[in-house]
Amino acid sequence: MTYSIIGTGNIACFLGARLRASGHQCIGIYGRKKEVAELLADTCYAEKYGTIDDVYDGDADVCFLAVADVAIPIVADQLSFKKTVLIHTAGAVGIESLKDAARDYGVLWPIYSILKNNQPMHREIPCAWETNSPKAAKYLKEIAHGITDILFEAKYEQRKWLHVAAVVSNNFTTHLIAICDKICAENNLPFSVLMPIIEQTFDRIKHGDPKTMQTGPAIRKDNSTINAQMNLLEGHSDWQKIYESITHSIQNFR
Image (cartoon, rainbow, N blue to C red; front, side, top):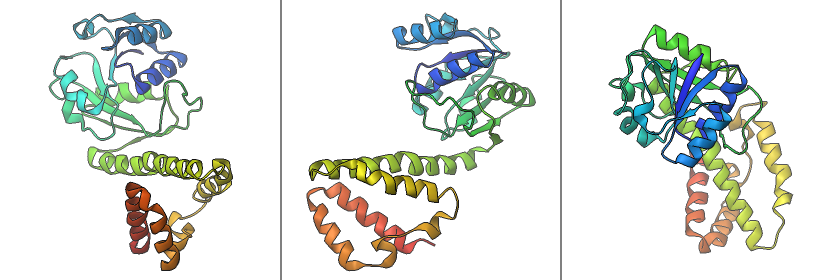
């Protein structure tokens, strides 16, 4: 199939590289950062569009709108497709944001943390999809198989909750580990000594119910330890609030 991409961020670069490698043909790339768009276009052996008006209807089978969530309706307002299927890539934005921009449209959301300079090489990248028409579904699924082996349909109401879960499991977890790194650095301790327990944590949840794997002072209701650690964090009020909030959540989790 043929495709074009509006956007030059992490997802745009991932789509361009993965779809080109799977045999799909990129027609063109548009992005506000001209130098980055040109580099991505060169990588995909495609044209660099000078303006968004150059993204013509019918030039490609599919156009990916791979921009920030808040920019989706703004960019979509500048498009008018009757032939090309328009697909955005955001988990927390409904397909209705595209209804005035294209006749056939949908969402393809990779549930994965993707960085343009450290892209996954495997195909185990779950992708949720939703479309408004049979044509959009056919085109989306055909091109999506160039990205992943794990493709499932999820309506907006489902994706909203899945996006919350993805934010907590990935972004929040990364931040918590960054806090641990900072604690070690401030106290002249090697962060590396925490790696075995971090790896053990993620290995355990692959094989059982995360709720049953919970250990530590919160689940034991060891108030002496909890209070002592809260006091230790007095110099970092944000971390102290996180510690208190998660402790409360653990103790009241059902």
